[in-house]
Image 1: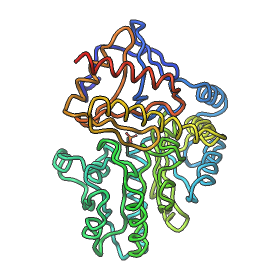
Image 2: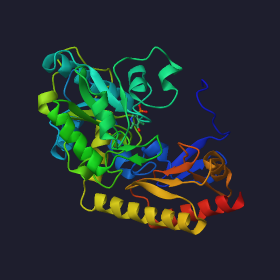
Image 3: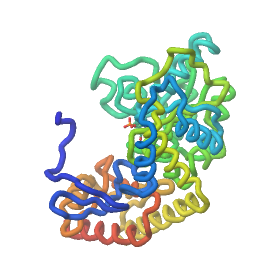
Length: 384
Ligand SMILES: *Cc1c(COP(=O)(O)O)cnc(C)c1O
């Protein structure tokens, strides 16, 4: 395998719920879950059944034909959101590429060729050239230069910086309702409302990248619903597949301007993956599920706040089950390593910035598992 990141010298062989097991049989409590991907935990029965059943029927007739699971999933997503149509893809970056293309096409048709999309410092939208350019990760502007042009940057929760970035070439504003990779930084409710009002006033599209925040992660089905606003375009990834490659681009009818040949992809909307997405989303909209995510998120938040208070640390933040513990120094990577090496039970946590830890457990994580995570975490903090 090509080197792209340092990997620990172990091989994961199986998983169940909140647990991963490596080649030596050692178990790890997993609060990363494939980067907020396995929203129902490792190998949940819903996904195993959906894969087994669908694999006996049909894998991929080609995206140029309708298939049952894709239609059903599109119906479910549009029924539970403010959007009218869905385009399925395989990764978050690909869904965001689709959103960028759709906005540019709409700009050509309705705004005299406007194509610029205001995005945010420290934002993350993926690893293709266009989505890297849309991202505001420090250093990414020069990493694979030249960038794709047309993504001026504003600052999150600073409406004046958005106003300053808008000009006659602007067609849209795109943001994560909670900046995930930047360290779980929520957009303020008031900022989202003012941003929606500003974009409406200027005739601009509002694009919500909910690849990390969507599908129940924040305690609502979609994070934009916390602010009571309605974006024009939304992208989903990660959790929508519960662990398999599936993503989606959703838009309101008035924005759906793709013509034949503008957009596509060999695997897009294939029934094997959309059958899994259907099983996942059906579970997440089932009675009581989201209320439980919100309650479990509040519990995790409280436990993290207690830990911070006891140690005199800065605190925690987040929405639902996407949370970060702010550290007093840059010990994040050392804690991640200590968690991995902890025996007999390891702990998987993530440190997107050295001064914080991020927690993104399965949405059905139990309080006992949260308690155990904190016990393990206290152990590695103490042992340093
Ligand atoms: C992970 C992520 C992406 C990229 O998704 P991939 O499936 O890795 O391409 C895009 N946007 C946000 C907000 C993400 O968290």
